[in-house]
Image (cartoon, rainbow, N blue to C red):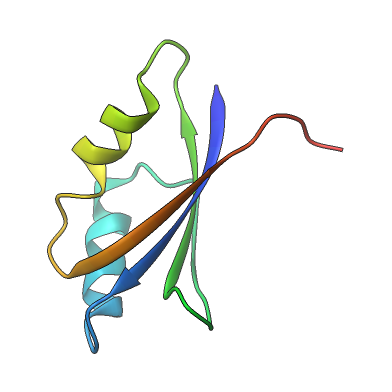
Length: 78
């Protein structure tokens, strides 16, 4: 599995609505509200052989009220 962290910036006042949709879709291992430039932080395990970009586009970026995303791929845990 490939672990990615995805940060999302939501339209003002829509963060909890976006978080509810993500929670209902059950693909995020962990979901946090955050301060700073982004509103939500997701920890997502992508199955082996899956295209990371397509996986994210198909499960996350079609959710209404997301303004911006930033995906960080991970390589090794220490």
